[in-house]
Length: 63
Image 1 (cartoon, one colour):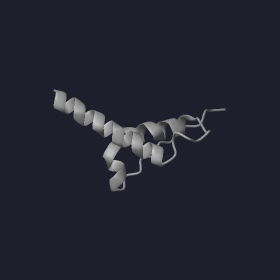
Image 2 (cartoon, rainbow, N blue to C red; image 1 turned 120 degrees about the horizontal axis):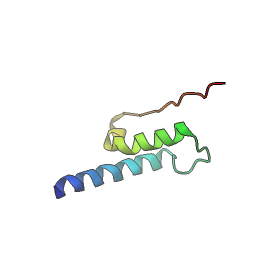
Image 3 (cartoon, rainbow, N blue to C red; image 1 turned 135 degrees about the vertical axis):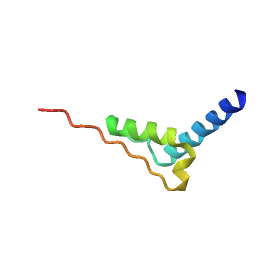
């Protein structure tokens, strides 16, 4: 169980590094899509470095 926790922690740290390199923590736009992109980038972890570029779109509110 400890090995799994260490692997998950390393995975998430790599994801945080990738999100930081993409500038997700320094922008002023705080909306649904930005938050979604940041979260999915962190979860994708090392996959960010093999070409996966996860994006999230949020539905527009109805008028």
